Image (cartoon, rainbow, N blue to C red):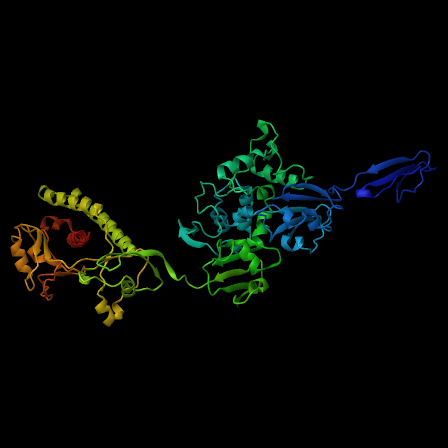
Length: 632
């Protein structure tokens, strides 16, 4: 009688035999030829809890996940087929093989480059290997603000993502440099006492366009709309009740990942309503939720890619890959990039080695190899044109919108516009700039806040005699809050002067606006005068004469603070105080003489200097608006 084959999958056979002296002897069966005797008892001892032998499992971004016979797919190429057989938007530079170590029985993660594996370089598979293939959307998860915040040591903003929860624990227990490749290209700011990601709207590979964490951060791998994609993914991802809870989800997902692959995150919907209690959120890539241990490995194998590429960010690779492949993963080098060079920083033995490669010959990027942890920047020359146009209005021979090159000046653009007409008055040019407008507007808001605080402080201890001053202050604050800054900059716009003094020529920026008015024949008298308005310009006439023509100043005027706004936007007091001398020059056409009102009722507010400056600014703005009105 044969005992049968033993030793298979760790199974042992033991024989219990009664000897002639009545004692019991246990005999271990060595082979199948061991003979049995009458009265023997045969005992089968189960082997170790090893996995199923002779198979590999394919998972992730594939059309047909599941188990395969190792004999039918001995290599990765046999398992996946060719490049034509993989799905569109498959991430080729990195796939991961989860392998059972033959000595320790622990899991190992083996990075694999699918490009070389499918191009003929065989990657042998072993029994029980689980191969994970990723999509481009899966890898975009590395460049999301939510993941970067976790790497920076902040609390996980997406607690429903099991992969981020596990990454948060690793960040707290690991070296900070382990995962910093995903934050190298992020603009870091201090917010609420901790380091945060700032300025990431639409950058660094985030396909969400910089959406907030409460919005959808991910599009479907087939390009569907987020809501529709989430519905379809959730419909095909029923998860059983035993996956509820943070602890159970990881164990259940791990057990599924080592199962036969017939069911998983790609299976069809078919469970009952009660089984669909926990669904993987749309913000969390399914492959990382099924196997959270994959995410840290993917990050550790990433290369930081920046510069003149369409989608900068962190891109995982297996081994060494060419800069050309990295550029392809970043959706290519910008079409407008010129004088391209590669700036590569490599970590070697604790030091950083810088390398510059000039991309001036065909195949240079294909020959430049980079590896995980490197930093690659595609450096290109500055763009030749500004992002926006400049508006020329008024007495240009060819007014309109003009695109400008970097560093172009006002004199150069005026020449392109055919110069100025014979009616132009360049001394009265009105030059406005967006950045200056923002600064002026912020100054107005700051002054409004200061005045409001001062007025409230005075109102708290006001007496009856101060009522008029308080009302005047309230009216002034109301006017100030409604005032829109013009962003005017005083410039020299006369081409004849700029030809002699090129140092006065203004370098233009996108969004600039230049208005050249006609030569005016009037002088404005505004403020606390008897008859405010425009007066006929007469060469050589003094400012006092113009004020007399306006009926003189009123009794409430502040005669000590009368000033003149010249056509170029500068202002000068007409009467000096102390050692300062007042304006004694001629009054050019287009000037505005302003007589402010006496603000002594506001003196007790303790903000007299601010109030005086505000009134001056308001009236100066009125002068500019008046000049603009004459050019329309």
